[in-house]
Length: 238
View 1 (cartoon, rainbow, N blue to C red):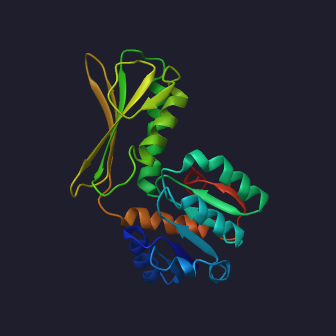
View 2: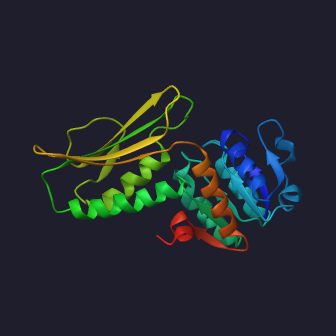
View 3: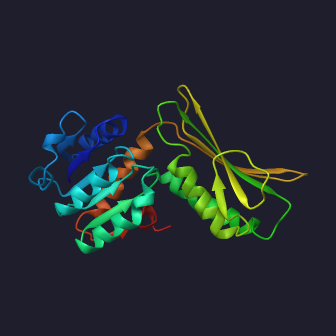
């Protein structure tokens, strides 16, 4: 597999380490220091692109990969207000895009558990529902993309919740997401149901970036030669 890495921060370096160990080849690495090398010609040396950057540049980066005819997987969060525009662009260009708020196989199993638990709780009005996410202080967006995905999946099952809010609330129509930023902590997500009698929680805690990197490479292999819009649920058949 020949990979273009768009974004060479901590995640990009973790992906590179695992890719090299598995015999894959990184043919292009783009960071803020060498944007001039982010050309159609250079992208076409790869058969898949992996994009982990930031909300400000993700849309341009993804479109550039699609324009080059290279399927792209993106783990950047905070840009999904533009997702329909990017989706339309991808379809018009007959490109391939896989977006996931989280590429960890464990987190995607957690997503499935969240949906199942929400369906069980959907007819029970005795429980107050909330989500908490904890990340390191360098994380730029809040709430996390993973927390937003959890919230959106939950609200599809518990229809009394019409929107989420990134603060505590007593409004029963709103789903509270509490974001905490602390030094040197593992990424943690907690979905909580609390009644007068008990508390039900499902928790996922990431121990390292390797799980995200391994999932990203699994998604990259899945995307080679594909056209259309995909998610990790397609990769894992969840």
